[in-house]
View 1 (spheres, helix red, strand yellow):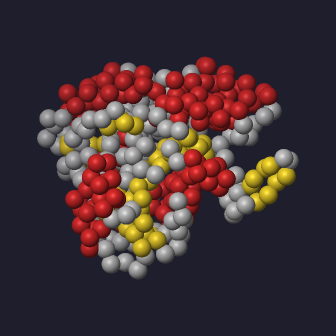
View 2 (view 1 turned 45 degrees about the vertical axis):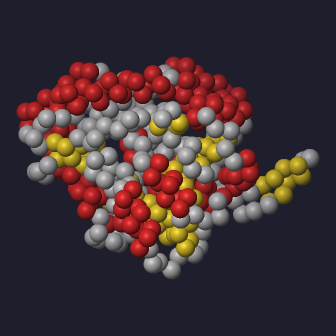
View 3 (view 1 turned 30 degrees about the vertical axis):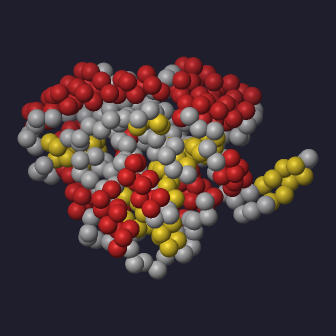
Length: 362
């Protein structure tokens, strides 16, 4: 089976995690601190705060920034549901904005329209752009709109570790950035996430909230605020430390494979490829099937030993959110979008097999 993704976990990664397991010191500690320091240096920020998942990172960011009941947050209509779920978990209300089908990111023109026409009872407090599949959202326009309308920017950079725009890492444009280390990401700690920020007071609040709101001073433990158990374990951090050292190598290999897909299939009459944006790190490559039954296509590929699958969700159209229309871009991407195998260890022959499947089928 040519899998959608296989994490780049090597012997040295496993050995470091085993060392932690053998030590008996499993909870957040030395290796989490090392992982945070390396991430902060790599992304170019003063502070990185490791947590248990990318969703936890989004929730903590909103909570630490004081966003909750009575507030509203602008989010793209097409993403993994965690983006909107985190807003709801904070007590706020997600306000959905449709996406551009060119790159699957929030449409900056529509974003401005939604802001100007907003009449909800909750106060607009923040924009949470998603860098979908590792493609940079239009941060210049988003940050301009945020400044004009006094809104915070919280970047959902779950898929975008290593992505840069004009030399600046994604996750550093707003109040904070939120990353994920799920196995489908470029580096993995099994589950896990991190928040990045240059705000020392915000970082302190994030660290407080991730561990039950507890403060320890001179051996005395006090609960300062109601917090969460969002800590990353030391063996998770150990698994990621050496992967982070290889991240640029990983991203370079992905780019080579993506170029191979474009060269072989971009002219296919039944497939639509996204526009290639500068800085894209290709956590996934999602294509659109112009016609035909996507489910049947996925099953047919599986029978040929190739795993392809759905891309992301039109979140407002899910049962939980219940908005059935008004997002044609997101709806089309959910109905027609699918991701193809892509990971650093994928051999060129694997891409060629995927190409042959589509050439012979469509």
